[in-house]
Length: 259
Length: 322
Image 1 (cartoon, helix red, strand yellow):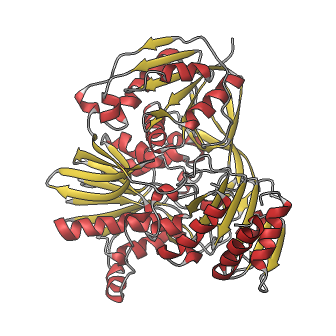
Image 2: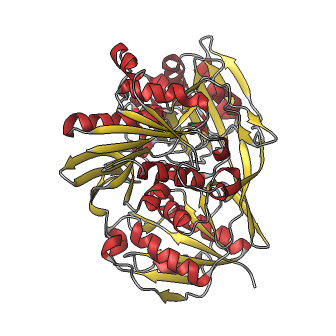
Image 3: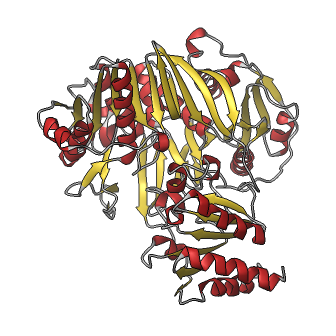
């Protein structure tokens, strides 16, 4: 059972995101990074499946050199090895360019199952997993909240608007997991030590056979025209509760004629 | 001739979703609205689509679209797009919509824009407004690829208004090749929901991590009852297993727009804000004076939610004479 996990390493949640007004992109360089919690869930799910069924977990990510810390974290959790797509030429890739790169890197591995997060916690587009599945020629199942394997048959509980669906497919398949699927483990000292010796393969776009007009800003189908702070809602009054907080809210409700 | 703007009609619980009708209204306002309706649908579905502005409906009632995920629908839509080349096609930012758009954008090598709050079409190009990075930045994007622009539209981005067109249906052929029937829908399980639903609620009382546990949602239920509202939650509360996913408000949950939103123990992560910040009035209670939610609130109380909420409930009861 060889599992490939695609996950993103993103600016840490404690970082206030700034935008570079010339490139219209998030400033990532020099910012503290962490394995996206959504990606950590995908790694965790891969580890749980291989603990039960045997096999390897390979993390594939794309990003600047600052993301290495997050790759090491996934390796310390227990991933077998990692692949890092590291290339200035891929900066500014849109979802489609990202998916082409990830799919090309996945094809270089042996895999039965690809696990992705449903969406990253820094851009939330939510369409990269489905695009990767198309380029790999495997079926996509997204919003998975439970995965069960039985030989080459995979059964997935998938979140729905009204509850959940039970869907079935046959390996190889790509599954995007929802963030609540598990509680990712914290790396232990032994894992952290072991991670230092694990392999991180580095690929450029050229290594993956992708020409410059397919990736990065040049290859992007989606172009950002403007970026800025949205019009702020006029903030109202904030009071500190000194024993009358509930009553003050009731006064406000009366003022807006709710009660 | 006006640009043809297509809408992917989506069903939930055997009814057309509200977002389908919102997108149709918008499409009809800026161009010639047409709809694609795949899978078994209630008899009046085509009629409702026409009522909301669809001047043409491409339909196939084959159960393959209900019984197999994504690929049959993507195959049929891709064929229709290549044949008719509408200027744009709108999909709801839903489970189904995102999966079909992901496939189409890769297959047609055209890209797509996610999480669209508004858009303008001009001379074959599109300019879409997206609240990027949750709600803290907003950007406008365009697609430079030729051909049909694929947009994933946020729920409640537009209002749904009737705009009756004569009903015109074109039946299309089902995509039933075995290679498309790869993910089988074995069973749909509805999770029972209690109390008033979030959709359409005029008042919503919502709880986050600050509620500390499942049992404390009873307090919010009581507040919702005295105000005649529904109870919602943040992703943190849902992920912790305190309340079911159906109650989740935010980017990966529901988008709501009630008259009154009371946020209890919610810090205001962008993920949550983007699902509720267009509420008419927002009141928040949080112990952290720095919580971002206060910047979006019409009235905020820095305090202990377990003291403020019970006092508020008592006060409302008193004033209402209950």
